Amino acid sequence: MKAIILVGEQGRGKSTEAENIVKTFGNKDLFVFDINGTYAKFKNNKIKGLPSMEQFLEISEKVKNSVIVYEEATIFFGNKGRSESIVNQLVRNYHTKNVIVFIFHSIRSIPVEIMDFVQFIKVWHTNDRKSLIEQKYRDDIDFLNVFTSVYDKTLGTEKNRDTGVFSDERSKEFYHYNEVYSR
Image 1 (cartoon, helix red, strand yellow):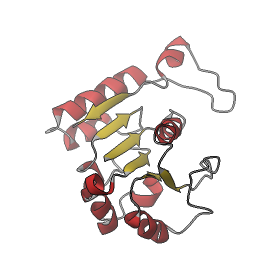
Image 2 (image 1 turned 120 degrees about the vertical axis):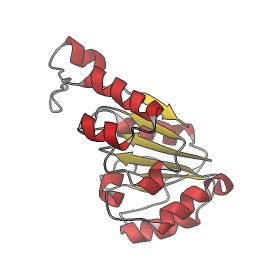
Image 3 (image 1 turned 90 degrees about the horizontal axis):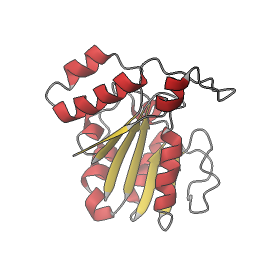
Image 4 (image 1 turned 180 degrees about the vertical axis):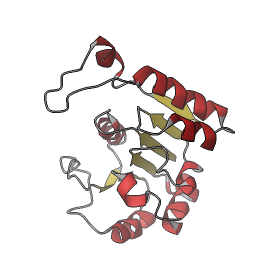
């Protein structure tokens, strides 16, 4: 069905967006690798507690017509090598009718086998070095344009996470700014 990456630094709005996606597909069963315990409020959540990463991959590879969320996918997949289970889920995604959501903190930490199979990437500000992203994605001008636009609009924006106060008017306007790249 759909595979989506949400990527941005902490506090920019990724988890809120993931929860909105879950609500949109509320008629589907929900399977979340929920390291922070934030999805317990969803009645359709079929995962209780926190299974190991291997157990979660085994479970999620078998489900159909569901929403699968890899919350904190940076921890789950970041630079750990190729996961045949994820490739299998993504390749079969049309037939399983699953919605798969991956949440990463940086573009650098997204494994190529995930990046190659997603239909949508929602980009918030990341701490990625612009020169590295420009070099890595020089052949994907559309993605690079999305990254650069978000980078330029959000550079220097700040918010105190404890108080919720933005450092200035520009931060208030652009702190949560994001764009969607679709294939």
